[in-house]
Image (cartoon, rainbow, N blue to C red):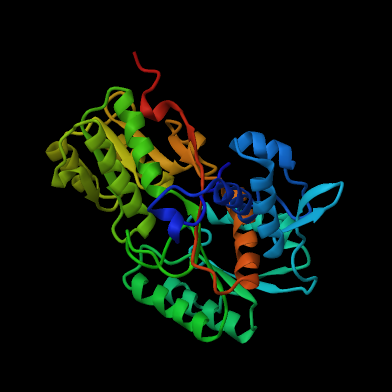
Length: 377
């Protein structure tokens, strides 16, 4: 199962949840993530009973609760099925993604939304870029006003990053949609600095775990002097990856220091050369694939060989990652599945507007290529 469920409520701490709650959460999280799709038949009572080593009556109780809440339809003699969307009414959802075209994960996420079975009769609305607007902060504000004027039923919002006033603009957009009564599903990142969480649902990955996995991968292949490299003013997701990067060092009993995290632009050869001289890294975990690709270009100018002199990994597995001069080892985001999960989360939010905010976090796949030096002798 790919999706981690809600972290709120009594299940996030205290005594372990009952078997009834475990079965309930398993099915509910599967529905919300899109793993169990509308009208899909669920595992039988007997299968769930065996899977969770509990009584059939406990399973039936969980399924009955889900049926009462509108998630499941139980049919005598046929089994249990995921309920169809609560209404055939066509809703219009806005895509507020100012960084579309710069951050390549959003294009496949949007395709995943458009192709999701749960989208049904509903419509995705792309906001038009006003003439002469190239500033992403201005574009974000304009798209927000557009979706409010169109009375959108909900908005999928990918908060701004890499701009001077991104935090202010992100909060302004969220507040504007709130005042208009428009539900928000955040894509990939939160509007608040890590580790804080806003009160909006978020669909993405576990960035802390992702950072841990990539640092661990380099450590397993012999690196002992790692740095995390990012551009200034990155999204909070990057800070989550940095936290996981540090966690890996603690787990491996390696020292932490202030130079482990480097933030600068990738097209500054002198700064990159100075960083290499001061930090003497043997491996670099980059904030994303774009940063990794640009860093590799600068390293080539400096005569630094990847992976012979320096091993590099990234995140996302964007479409050009395997086409770089040295194909990039990276963590593949399940963008298509994220899009489908976002649609399900929006319909769920509309149907249950008072439920606590959730983080729907999907698993990633490690893609090993030459840049990490895994095949080096």
